[in-house]
Each structure stands twice: as C-alpha cells, then as structure tokens.
Length: 426
Image (cartoon, rainbow, N blue to C red):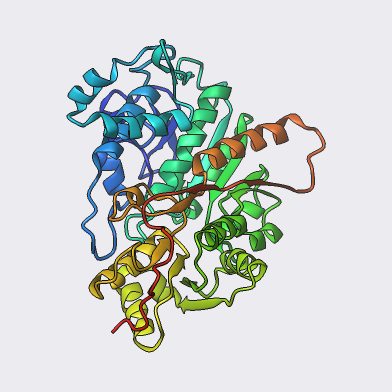
C-alpha cells in the first residue's frame, strides 16, 4: 500500500516530494507533488473511522478546513509569504463559523505552516522546495504500519508525523517517499533507495517493536541509518536512534492534574503491557500518598471500543465508582465514556476523565476530552534533522535518543470531585 494522493497523480505527476512506485514491477518510477495527505480520500484510505462508531464521529468542520488549507500550502497553491484573506472571508468561503476557523488556523500555526501577527494578518511561512532538482535532492523514506484494516483506526498518527516530515523536507530541500511496513519486504523500495547516493535513511513509525518484527530485521540489515519514531523506552535496545514523546511524563502530568483538582480515588484503565504509562500514573499517585487502582485490559479489549465498554461495565458492577479515570489513550477514553453514559453517570460532574494522544476527534466528543499531545509533527521534524546530522558526521554516535516534552491540553472532561461521590454504579 502506498500512501500517495490521488489528486496529485491526476495533476500530472510532476517531479516533487513524494516517490510513486509501479505496483507491478515495484520500481520507483517518479514523483507526485505532495499534498501532505490532505484530502478526504486519503483519510478514508487510512481507515478514518472508529470501531463501533459509538459516538458517531464525523469529520469536524475544523479538521476539514485544516486539511484543505494544509493541502493548498503543501501544493504551493498558497506560496510562502502569501497573505490569507481576513477571517470573515475565509469563514464564508469554507462555510464555517469564525471560532471553528480559528481552531484550524491555530493548528496550522502550531505546526509551522502559517504565522499570525496583529496588523499583518495571516501569512504562509512554509517554504516549498518542489522547484529544485529532484535527482540531486536527498531522500528520506517514511515507513508506517497504519493500514485501513487496523481496528484501532489511528489514522491521525501518520497524518501528524508526515506533517512534520513534510515541513522538514521543505525546510532542508529534501525529497521523501513513504510505504507500509507490510509491503516493504517484497516491494524492494529499501533496496532501490539504498543503491542511491542521495538516500539519507529511513524513519520507522512504530508504537512498539519486538525482536521478531520483520521490519526491524530488515532495517537492522540496512546500510543506511534509520530512526524509530514514537517507540517506547524498551525499544531503545533495538533502535540506536529514536525520537519520541515522554509518555511516562504525559501520564504523570495527567494524574497530577486530577490530584490538584482534589481527586483521591483515581483509576487507571489501559492495556497490561503499557508499562511506561502505568509508571507515570503510579509516580504521581505515590507522590500524593494515594492508592493506585488499575483496570487492566487485554490486547483484544484494547482494540475494540465495544469490548472496552463491556470491560468497564463489568468492572463497575463490583466496585465503587472512582471520582476520576485515567485512560491509556483517547480511544480507550471513548470506550469508558460510553460505558459511563449508559449508566447515566455524568462527565465531569460525577467522574472526571482524561485520555492521551490528542486525537483530532477528542476535541469534538461530548464533553471535549482533556488529554496530552504526543507531538507527532515535532517528532517527524526532529527525526529528519537527526538523519541529516548523521549524514554530516563522519563518526556517527553509537546511540541518540531524543525525548520531547508532552503538552497537557485541558478541556471540559475534568472538574473538581463531587461533594457526595456515587457509592454504587448499578
């Protein structure tokens, strides 16, 4: 599976930032102008859906505006230095309200695509490098395990990481291509790139690694350096170069936020193998001299919203309801939220709830979810910078691990605990 833009192919397949491969011969045959996966069909190809659609999440207006503006900037239809129309005109063009438009512009500004200054308006600060000679430009390969049949439906992960890779590629005048790790063995894309002198290396986007991972085995044989993106602390024994957000600190901040609100019974809900997340939760609990409570989910329960909802309902039957819940991910928080709604338990009036990951749809559930930002765009950008640094150094460092600080995003799903907490759920 090649993540490339259909509209870009129809636009003439000019030489540019994204390598296109012949599906029959598995050879790199050219390029297409990068749209940064900014159209609805790209989102569909990444499986933009939730498992059981319990809260009927559709593409929010703010996300739609973001992706359309992002596509125009990456395609150079909005060039560097161009001034965007005033907010009232933009809101009318996209048929959205001004507050919705500001959400989209704030994300573009945060990712470095636009700048907003009082008196100067909104300008594009993203420099496209598609006009340079693609034959002499250094190439970066981005590999991800996301595919349409994944139940987790984490379609936002490659979108976020590729946004940072796109920005770095244009800042440093690089070319890039991407593929799925399920196809890399028989597609020969890595062999093809390794034979080229201008190949910088590979960015591997995996949430975790195991010793028998076919992609890991192939990358360890690669002559070019590779960087692991969004791994865990345990994965550092497999990868010499990594870039990730500090997931342990993220859960420490989430739990600490609930403690500062006055909560004393805080439940952690997550997978059994989420060691880094439990570590951050326990650290905050121990510092506050509280008792840790864990609802451990199996791998099968953690990938299905319906299964998470059932597990939570079963847990509520035998135990008193906590005043706050720390979910191991935003998707896990969605399942917990549905189970609480079925019991007619209000969030945050009765129970506060937090997630992790800052999925785009976490801001549009009811209530909007307090979470932490995994800084995927910044991770993608730093991974490209790391590969460039390795290329320039004759003597490469043995290891290099870049850890980014998480960002706590406060929304409406947390509040002070109720004066009279519920003793029974059923």
